[in-house]
Length: 118
Image (cartoon, rainbow, N blue to C red):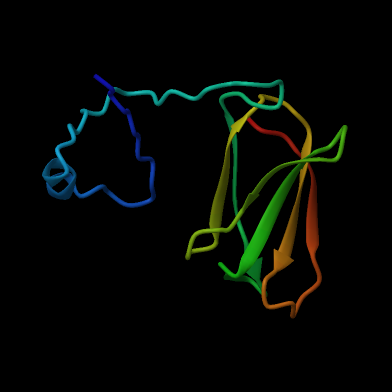
């Protein structure tokens, strides 16, 4: 018998009734989530922040996170509608920098240097 495990970590609550209709079991919250660490850039640290345009929350951006020592691209994400963002699964205390690009190309890219995941 083949069993497939799927996990959902979205930004909105999953529809339990619809999941049950597909014949799936909804597991209770077990506390800490499991994160697989496969290389030295990954771990249990996070970086959180918000994108603002002229002082107001702004979701129309692309954010790229780079490892400072090697300039290696680690993640590329979009902020939530309220402008907040979070990079997860990062090595603790690894110096990084973030480059934010305006998707509408009305503003130049901005950089935040020496951000340290905790």
